[in-house]
Amino acid sequence: MNWRAILFFPAVAVGVGAFWFMTQPSEETGSAEEKAPAVVAVRAKVIEQLPLDVVVTGYGHVEPVRSWNAVSQVEGRIVTLADGLATGRIFDENTVLIEIDPRDYEIRVARAEANLATAQAQLQELGAQESNTRAQVLLERKVEGFLQKEYDRVVALVERGSVATSRQEQANRDLLNQQRKVLDLENQIALIPVQRISADASIRTRDVELEEAERDLARTKIFMPFRGRVSSVDLSVGEFIRVGTALATVDDISTSEVVASIQPEDLTDAVLALIKRDDAFALPLRDNNTALAALKGLGFEVVVQQTTSGRIQRWPATITRFVGASDAQTGTVGVVVRITDPLKPDIVQQRPPLNTGSFVEVVFQGKTVGDRVSIPRNLVRYDSDGSPYVFVSGADQTLQRRDIVLGRRIQNRIFVTEGLKAGDTLVLSTPQPAILGQRLTLVAEPDA
Image (cartoon, rainbow, N blue to C red; front, side):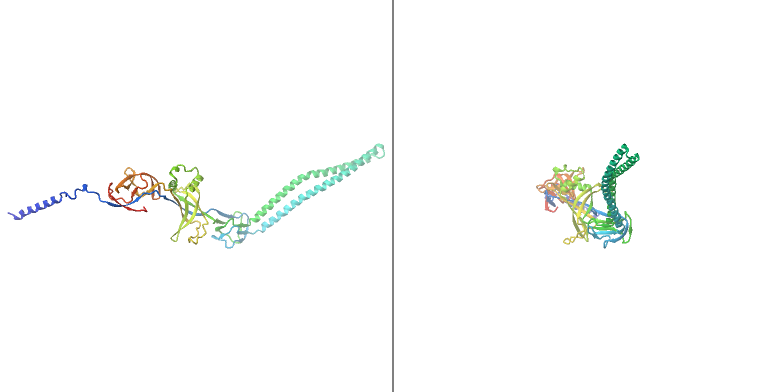
């Protein structure tokens, strides 16, 4: 007999007995189903209906509100340029930028003045001629009367046979000649009104010629129409320029504009977030003007920002208008904002000038009235059918599910129109796994 084989059976029996003992349920611990879930610490926050900051951001380039292109209206040689005339220089209003040789235009003015004086003298001469002619008519009529009496006397003598008929014929010729002379003078007087009309027209023509010559003379000096900065110029003294030659371009520095490109949905969400719910469908959007007035009435504060040397520089701005068309490539809409004195440095804030052409960020800031519930968007969960819900802490500090109805989103938050109210405790960090009814230890997070 093999004694080693006999010793193997007791060892197997001991192993089986130990396995059976270990797999039996303990009366003290109970089954896994009978264990109470452990208390889990979670971050939470009590919901409050507080005002919510609404921020919409757009981007664009700084442009002058108005630019002036100096174009020559006369031709000639440049005799004077403003001291230091070059790109980037700033000049005050009414500064003479460019002067063209005025001598040719001074001669034209003198010629026009002489022509006008001649026309005025002709009119005066016509008046004197009329007076003299009328006086001469009176005199010639007296002579005509005398000759008429002489003719009548000669006719009487011829009838008595005292003189020859040839004497009557001579007297008749003398009378007719005098009558013709009077008639010629009267015709001259009748033509004077027509001659005066012609003289008046000549004077008006000479007036226009003088005004044109004076205007051309004035155009030989080109003045700054406003205080501005020269953005382009390429001239030199002695250069001959012709009519229509582009001389310089000047930008107004009193005000600048930025066409801020904004996504339409961002602007729409921000506007509707700032409107009271009762007024949500009363927003006047008939045209750009009423929409602009509504946008201004919502209390948006506008700031233009630019980062320089690691610092964010800010300039206050105002909304002026909509561009009125969407960008064909990006689909953005343009809101135009205006900055006053963009080139004026701020020593206190150590803010540099805001130069034309700078790429800037335009921030539209508003604040809701605080009568709605909003939560962080990342706390919203969705069922397989897309229904949104959140986790909340019940009155007994257990994990509960709450179905909600979502409203407009604002940046990283979203409005909840149904399902949550002020005073509810929102669970910010979900335990893993999330077991409904699980007891919670709430860790307050006021900044959530």
